[in-house]
Length: 314
Length: 309
Image (cartoon, rainbow over all chains, first blue to last red):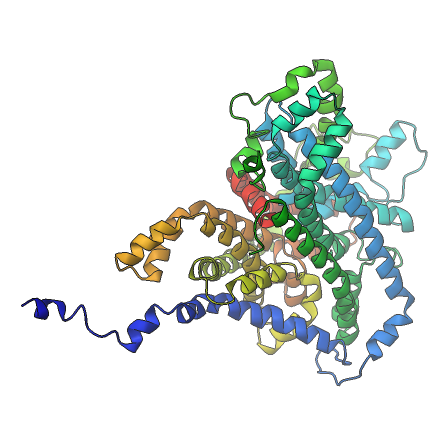
């Protein structure tokens, strides 16, 4: 009697039953969609891009292998080196200011004040609005003839003629850097604010009793405890500033006379507008060593965080 | 003491409202400061920064409702205000250009790419966090690295791939390439959420004979709804924001997305273009700002989740 009742339950598990609970088999199916996308549209193009940079491909025809010719050509190209200089200047200046202003803003926002939530929400708006659209607004603000900044400064009798924001070499560089800082500060500020809130207030209370100054409290409490999150946030910030394309393309398209061309915009111009896919790819590939350096910093930043929290590196 | 150091970033709700993890008195030591001092060290700098952060939007909105003759005659009219607002620019935008079509394209592409990415990410994140197959941690690290690969170095090879697959100048070119940006981000975010769901729940369900699929659908996903919303709206925002792929893969006017169309179609030599240009930028930003107003906390949690772990 019992034998009969239990028989269907205690039957020998078939291969299919085993497979259904096999983790490797299940995982393969769960990973399939994401893996398909990332391999087809990310890993493959990444390798293809490096390959194209060694060919003389043009739009509409595949290229043949030409070795390092594209790179040799770029080595002697002053516009390329100008774009490298611009990219480094843009990244370094914008990141330093984004960090300084973002940290300052985070510390301000961390204080107790009325309408805190609304103020914090407002601060993030420049990050939400599409970059191109706010860049277009900056283009209008920096207009040669009708700039509101020039007009205001003229009314205050600080300048006598309009500032040529986007027509002059260095003015154009500072203008796009300013727009980039404007867009990047909210991200840095809000993420650092999230880090600041985890600093226990008892540390500041103890420091106050010990007679520490505000600077000492920042230097010896806030900054050390914030270092891990600063490392990650700034890596992201540097990475996305270095590879920026849309802000420049909307505001100056690399002009005047290549003064604001970044490596990304130059590679777009050479590859898509000029049709020289090989050369454009070589410029894009030349960005990879810089990105790897940024990723390494991020990686060691992460390691250090786990070590600080006493976790194992899983 | 060490316990207090464990959370890496604060809970998204407190990022917006709290100042520190003290429950009893949120004012902390701020009673030590006098009002005049706070005015100079807090409200003044904060006011200036907020003013700079918001001014471009004010200027954008103002320009889009100013009549043409006031736009350029800065000396004749007060440029910071307009007594006679007009909807001419917005009307022109909506009825005389392809703008509604571009908005529709952007919306469709963003929604389709987001849904595809979330589906793929949920499965991948669950497998990495909970199935813990061999090498799962390496796959997790690889996904983090994929997150760091910028579109600016991928668009040239991707354009040849898109061309080979016959997707050039179709919405599918964007719907299938945007997930490369979105999947790494949302998988990373969802992994964080899934980790917080107790193992015991799944173990109970396994003993009761539930399959992995049933566990995912009936236990894990309902508990991870806040994470799904965060991932969804952040992915949607990233899609709306995307520029370089849309610029490279789309050539015909009626397939363009809003950011590309504004840059390519409106920036002709007309000196009176500013009104319609700013109206286009304003209308293109509004959907995201409205979405943001409703889901502030989820945005913050997506942002802090992206840098967490």
